Every structure is written in structure tokens, then in C-alpha cells.
Length: 320
Image 1 (cartoon, helix red, strand yellow):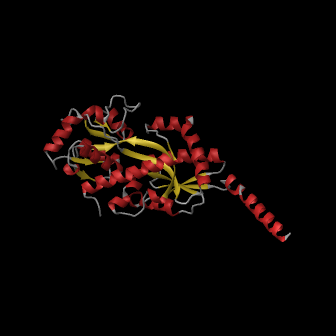
Image 2 (spheres, one colour):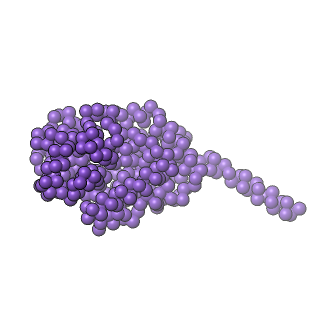
Image 3 (tube, rainbow, N blue to C red):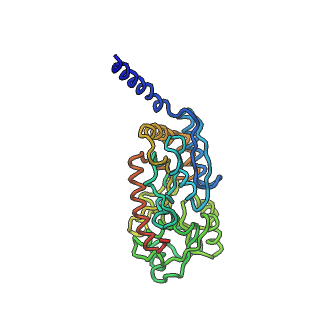
């Protein structure tokens, strides 16, 4: 009788324990954004957070944790309790820190939930540049190593690595370009139009106002296909005959060890947000690229990106 009672009690405890996950989330969720308020990542994060709030029935509150080129925020995502109540909007930089040596954090410390954005890097030059196309530019850069400068990014950032990878894929030493570091595309474009640098790799939306003003022209975009919002810009393969895809991205993650059921719940909610008209229209209005990868594919995507970036970082001599 005692054995039966004990088993019954255990079964009841297990049964009553099940709704804990089924009812997730039962309180507000924090979403860490590793970049400053008002920027592109912050805007995407707040749109995602609002959508998740509607889907999950609990507030999802954005907290900007900035500093050290995104390391502070990404570290906070990785070190959070794996209970589903702290998630983050990771960016491409998470695949670079370990290879550069600025931090040992990497995608391996995260539970991927879903990729929601990919912005291909564009090869932007001054409107009065002598380069008429990307092939001409590559030939000139190769023939004159060290002559030309690029800006619009911190050293080792996503657009730096994407452009370096583009050079490398076309037989040009990635170190042939001198980097003038900047905290984003805006100061880089100021340098470009003033003649201080020759190249600014950035997303096409970031170049939008300068292009519209006739101050900047784009020689190629590092995407597999032409972007719907910029049909006049050729892909790298169209421009030089070599396929090159690179840029920056954003995706929702949690800390490693997050329960599979919680990941599944968040992934399903995130997919609905991504597919919704509100998100799609917002991204289109900002010129951001949209790309969806579920948790498993997002994990493979980050793993591959980390390996590719490690190779380019080695060639650039950026290991600290």
C-alpha cells in the first residue's frame, strides 16, 4: 500500500510538473540587444519584441547592453539563466570574437532560436570615383596594394570581413586595402564624400540617402540575387564573375542549455512574427533584408560563419 501511494504521489508530481513548460512564459521576458538604442539592430529588436509579446501573451522588454563592440551584450545573453526569460538578438559579430581573440564567447554558448534578417554588404564608392565597375576596381586595388582606404566599420566587423572575403575570393590580398576604422557607416560615408577614403562596405539601406543625393554609387552587392529594393545593383557574381555572399545578420538566441520545449515555443512564436505583415512591411520600409532560418538551420549557419570568418581573420592578421 505504501509502495502504491509513493508511486501515485510520484506520478502526480510528474503530471503536475508538466504544465510548467506548457504554460511558458508565465512572466515577462527580457530581450538583450547588444547595440545602442536608435540603431538598426535596436529597431529590429524592438519590432521582434513587440511581435513576440503579442504571440506569447507576456511583455518582451528590450534592454540595450552595449560596449566592447557588442561583446558586453552577447556575453549577457550567454551568461543568462537558461530558463527562457532572458533571450537576445545576436548579430554577426558573435562569429568573430573568438577568432580575433577579443573574447572567448561564440555561437557554441548559445541556443539558436531563429534567424530573422540578413543584410548583404555592398561595395560603395564615391560618385566621382574613376572606377566604373567592380572588375576595374579590383584590378586597380590588386595593382596598387596599400593605395586605397576603406571605412565605415570597426576593424574585424561583419562588413570588413565580408569585403575582405570578396577581395580574397577574387585573388586580391585582403590586406591590400588600408582600413580607417569608424563606428558605423555614417562617419564612413562622410569620409568617402570628402575624399578621405575610397570605399565604404555597408548595407544598401545605409547607403540609401547618399545614393539618392548622387554622392555615392554602388558597384556590387554581396548577395546571391539582386535585392528587390535595389534592382539596379548587380550581384558580385554578375559584376566580376565570382560568387561572393557576405554581410551582417540578426537572429534570436537564448543561453546554451535552454529547454528544447522552450526553444520550440519561442521558435514557433518567432516564425509567426517573421511571417506577419507587420514585420515584413517594417523591414521593407527600412530596406532591411529578410531571411528566415529555424533553430537547427540557424545553428549550422552560425557555425559555418564562424569557420569562414576565422579563415579571413587569419589572413588579415587580426588575431590578438
